Length: 497
Image 1 (cartoon, helix red, strand yellow):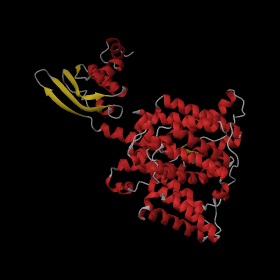
Image 2: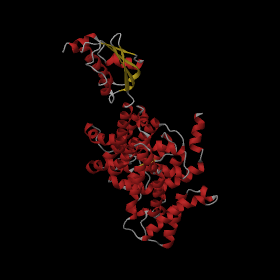
Image 3: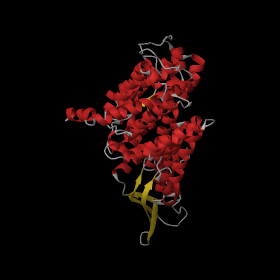
Image 4: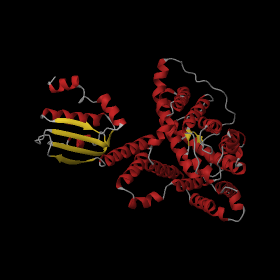
């Protein structure tokens, strides 16, 4: 069974994976250079990292067909470290990032994705689509009309080529776009910005480079805050991307294996002078849209990237940036969840607030983690508020025994605990009070505290109080944390100590 699934992951879609891998490798080059510039390091640092991470993750990742490499989100976190301490400390931080991510995998932190609601994922996707589009704007400002014409032609090829009979389904349209626009610009001698203008491409293969830093607590104090931030953002973006690709391909992925895989890939990157990276939503979408599904596509992308920049740099340098801008605009359009715009009219207000808040925070701060944390926090608060309204009560009175019965139904926790405690008429002239929680569930210490408060206050008013109907879970938490049925504790409370 394992052999069959492994064979399927690697060789179930050979032609589609190879062609998609070529497209992804071409799209990775300018991005890796751009992210190196953001981080303040030589372009080869980002290119070597992208090659290494993509190649390693193909074998150890938890999601087939997902592309990992140097990313903008990670590069932004490195700026201060590089500026203040230099490249060697960045390599050390990259190694530590990998160790922390492997530890996260063994601690099964991948399962935390279950706390991220669908609404937050949609907000994250939409924010990334906007950021991908915004990243293309510098290539479309203060340029000649040729750039706009080439970009428009590129988008035309991307969207119309698949409709051609037979050949349209065989070759990914982004690859056709890159080849055609390159040939056109060279043949017609059109002067436009090319990949070669982004920065110098490396001309040698990467070698093993151990960070030249002192291995002591002082170094650890410098790199740990950066490594922790890189590990958290890298895992968050990788797990979110895995969830999105799961949806696009209708398949599952192993999130904890992905955590470990990202860690191993980052350790490998740091060991050859590369920077830390993570999964890339843009390139992963390009891969899927170009027909890539298996691990082979990721491996091809990584190996081809290195071959292209080292051995085919003369060809790569002449690719017009307009062609890659067209591909990334296609990714932006394909990534954005257009149904969420219609949903603004039909979905609940709380759902829309969570989605829009996630988008606004990510786009405003360019911090993916901050946006997701904002979305998760708001979703949790709205959920708690919604659930608290499912707690209500009924009152009845037995005249023969002068007994007031309170029947509680629903969830009692921190957000509904005050309503529980305020449900009682403490001054009512009755001898006995029965609190029936048969159809209620106590979730936390706040709920137990509210019960204690009510029982003790009623007893202080001279009433006999009985609590009945606890389910097993409620009984357990009351036995552990409650005081109303513990004589020694009650004596302290009633005695005023």
